[in-house]
Image 1 (cartoon, rainbow, N blue to C red):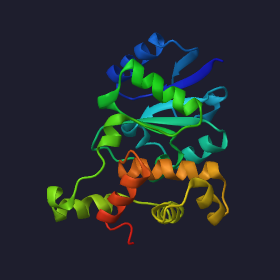
Image 2 (image 1 turned 180 degrees about the vertical axis):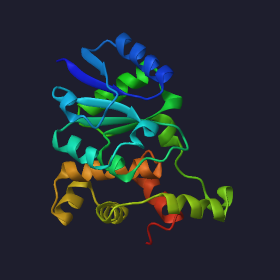
Image 3 (image 1 turned 180 degrees about the horizontal axis):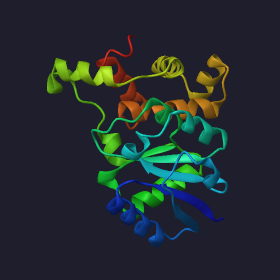
Length: 211
């Protein structure tokens, strides 16, 4: 099945690089480069948008909600120190580090997103737990202040810290299991953790979770 991809990257060199990688992939896809993300009429057949944090930084947050309503997935490329607006974090279907970007990792990300899985690349996952002794109290406080969890994400985090499965969390919060999986994926991305256990540890270290 053909996948329609919209590539929205302001940096010409980076955009050309990704275009070349996409052409080399052994999957059926159509790629179009778009300069105006706010013109939603250009996305009538698009299933996936690949963009980066710098480009999205100048796009109004309400566009993310409109894309969600149209069921258009967004894969966001980030550098290690990048800040992504909350509205885009909430809608993102995955995050891929520029440091990890290669044809095979791009392929993995696209496959995950198409299958409904939340994708986090290896480098972002490995930037998980730095203990307060290693980082220093000031660094830990700074990191904690930069991480903003929504009320729902806090609820999910507390319940998984209690050892609940996704199904149990869904029943407890009266939401779908898919909604729980998405919330967990966003929590892992925000905390830069590869799994739920490390996310709980990280949240406790940062003072986001009190047991």
